[in-house]
Every structure is written in C-alpha cells, then in structure tokens.
Image (cartoon, helix red, strand yellow):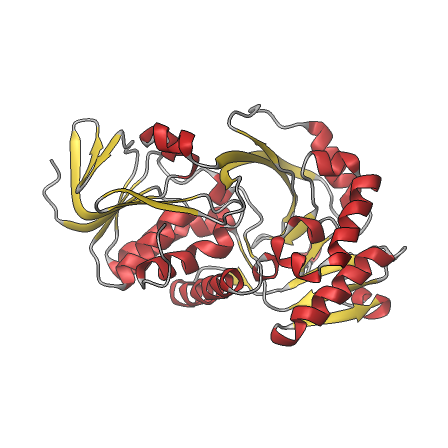
Amino acid sequence: MLKKNYDAIVVGAGIVGLAMARALGVRGKKVLVLERSQFAVGASIRNFGMIWPIGQQEGMMYERAMLSRSIWMEVAATSGLWIDPVGSLHLAYSNTEMDALSAFQRIVGSERNYTLLNTAATLKVSDSIVSAGLKGGLLSTEEAIVDAPRAIAALPAFLQERYGVDFQWQTSVNAVETGKVISGNNVFEANEIFICSGPDFETLYPDLFAQTAITKCKLQMMRFQSQPAGWRLGPSLCGGLSLIHYNGFKAAGDAVTQLKQEFENNYPEYIEWGIHVMVSQNQSGELIVGDSHEYGLTHDPFDRQMINKLILKYLSGFARFANEEIAASWNGIYPKMTNGETEFITSPADGITIVNGLGGSGMTLSFGLAEQLLNGTYQIK
C-alpha cells in the first residue's frame, strides 16, 4: 500500500495524461502519474509534433486548439522546451485545390491569421516548394511545432519540479476502483482517477470498450536526416490531400466536396490508405514526413513499404529537399472515434474519468481539453 496521499491519479504518461497532470497541478492538486513503460513510447512520440488549430472545426474545437497552443507556448517559455511557431502553408496545384483554399479563407480567414497567396508569393515562403504547376497557397501563422519525442520526455520533469507531480514508471495498472488504482500487489489511493492510457483502456474496461464507437488507427511516418548547413523549412508544408483530411476545411463547403470527388477519381490508392502528405521540421533539422491512416482493432505490426512509397511520391510533387535520405520509418497506433465524436470522455464509476479517443489530434487538443474538463466548461456525457 502506498501511504502517500494524492488528490488525483492519472494513468498514462502520453500527451493526454501529461495534460491532465498539468491541469490538476495548476489547481494545486497533489498528483501521481502511473505509466507502464520506462518512458512514453506510444503515439505521443510518433507524430509530427504539430500543434494544428487550422485542422479543427470552427467553434469549440478551434477554441480548444488555440487554448492548447497558448498553454504549449507558456510551458515552453517556463521550461525552456523547444517550440517553433512557424505556422503552416497549404499548397495548391490544381484549380480545384485553389478554389478550396480560397473558399476556406473567405469564410474563416477574417477571424484567423490566414493569408491567401498567389504563385509568386507562395514560392517566396520556402525554397523547398516545387514551382511546376503551383497555383498558390494559404499561409497561416497559428500552427507551431514541438519535437515530440523530446517534448514528451521532458514534460514529466517539468511537471514534477513546477507542480510537484509524482511519476511512477514501469507500473502496469490491472484494475481500477473508486478511490483506488491497483497494480499487482500495490494499491494507490486518490479521490479522483483519470484513465488516459490511449488504446490500452481496452484492457481495463473491455466491456465498455466493446460497447463504444471506437477503433484504432495505424499511421506510418518517416524522418529524413538533418538538412545541411542549418537549413530550416519555415512553415510546415501540406499538399492538397490534407484539405479533405482535416475537419476544419469542411467550412469551405462545396469546394472541398468537389475536391474530395476529384481525389477519389485521381488518387484512389491514397484515399484507400487514408494518406495525406505533410512535412514538418524538428529541433535537429530533421524533416518529419507522413502519413497514412488504417482503421481496425488489430493491425499488422510491420510498415507497408508501398505506403511509404506513395507518401514520398506525393511529397515530391510539392516539395524537394537537399537531403532526402530516410533516417527512420515507423508506425503508431491511437484510438479513434467512429461516430464523428472528437473524443471519448466518460465516468464508469464515481471518481473515475476516462479521457480517450482524441484521434490524431492529441498534441493539438490535449492541453485545452484538460483545462475545459477541469474548469467545468466540458460536460461529460
């Protein structure tokens, strides 16, 4: 029995768990985080490191993303964590893509820091952009990049130092009851318990998981070696496929619907494997490239080289780099709602809250969601 008294226990030290621990710590709670691994190794470190408000729908989701961004900036300023508010640049290589960007900017641009660029102005943003066939682009100043593996690794020490959050690693949780978290022969007690264990919540609540409209998504990504002479990409770059991937662009209405039909006709393999192509740059100058989306409860553990080739082929149509040697390739798995919901938050028993199902938007939304949950602006269903 652990004798130390805690107000709250968080299960899982990925970005969702870290966000909950921070939000609790800010409010003066004594917090314990339990993580089954020696350090976070899941989807929270296997991503672009993007804080991505532009991908979120207008209203609550966009506001949550911007709140998360402000917290990321505050945490970085306080802790010395590297963050680069480089923004994003969505590129158009067809009239349909340009029409979608124009419609999107016209509808939401007046309230956001977006600028629609012609061909010449777009090419000035980054010397990596392919000029052939370029119609223009949409530049946003709102997006930021963190180096995901380094950020997730550094946050526990920051939370411990600043808010007194305790971490216990290599602690697999096998049962949860009101007021108690059980790990083998150890029992940890707290008034509030937050389950933030990603797809692993299936092992704690198998019946609830089976009844929930949730699945698992496997993504594939790559990392290029560092670019020479300290070269920096500038804004993260996105091809046209991203316009039909992110819900935020649905604001463009018929223009995005038409673009989706065009992609379904011209890029059926990309639609089949859920591929949209983006590139960001980390702290070391390496380029992160991806990604794909395969949905199902069980996934092949191996990368599909065919998917990587499709990603690289599409990337070459809008960006080229001095060093395109692949330093690493990987896949990650995260939970994803199948009913259109943007997250899954429920209380299976008194004092226990499951926070899950953020899809691929954990880096963008977790800090904001944790704040909304604890300040009462989020209503648990």
